[in-house]
Image (cartoon, rainbow, N blue to C red; front, side, top):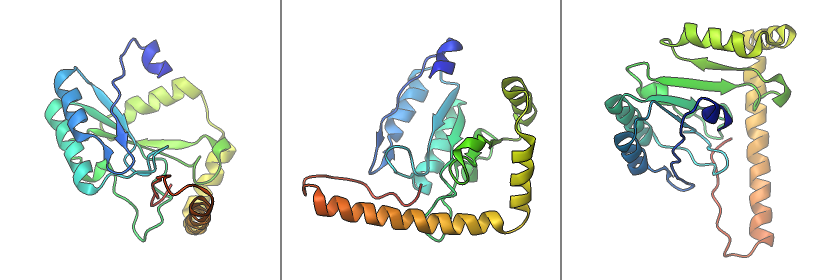
Length: 194
């Protein structure tokens, strides 16, 4: 939000329901009623609600963005941490106009201190590289080289499988404690990852 303020821009909040996700009606109304250039959203394992949009919702958001000429910045830092057998889809799955800037990170899956991530979008690739150079001057070469080596073999995939299993077990244990010690009137959602 501070970056938005520094740029003299205005943020419009769209509510997120932990059970159903982003309000598509609010998104459409915002795109229709305001001169929106970009929309930032988490579609998988939203923090703090834990919700994930289904494929139909994701497709509809991309359709709305296409219709209203809005770019989508998809913060997908938790998508590698799914508990099911299949990784959740990205907005990019439905993007035919290169409108989605898909953002990921190793900070959630490896180590927060690495502060290393990526943005995928062909249209803005060169511009994003320049912005990255301006904003950080240089990243840690040893960390980048270490992660590159880690990705070249099955080490990262093996790590993710173990991490997913561990996170799912921890979530189950936490839910057992909530069910045991909290009043029955407490409502919570059970994320499928993150």
